[in-house]
Length: 186
Image (cartoon, rainbow, N blue to C red; front, top):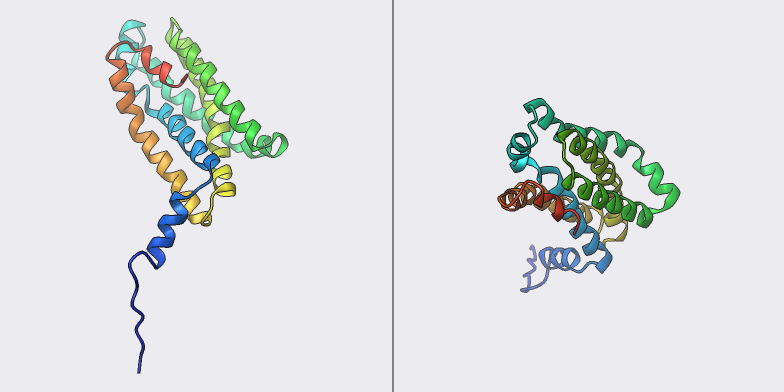
């Protein structure tokens, strides 16, 4: 004779999962929101590449460097982010990363040559590496409900940020190619 248990509404794994995913410390939500903004920076320039190239008289190769410099520096710097975070602490590394992102986004938005923007995007990539690698560790370390749920929260921030970047860049780029850079400064 087998006994079947009847699940009551609001009980069971789905209720527990929802509870532990949405009931996070404020610091986890703050880092997740900042992660969305940081990930937006990846695709923010995509829709404004053509206007930048036209207005600054840049070749397609020069314009492509706006992504390449950013991604190359981000990838290489992520290799040492753990050491930096261990030495100075997660909070200081996160804040330093955000400060670097804001500084280099402001410099990129006020640039007059594509070469300057390429260099400033590289600096932006350094800040992004410091932030995004440390953000994952911070969310995993601070979130309730286990590592898997913390990673899901981080991945959601990543997906929203990457998806929103080109949309925000395109919307703001309608006014000027400089305008999307101001999103990263706010």
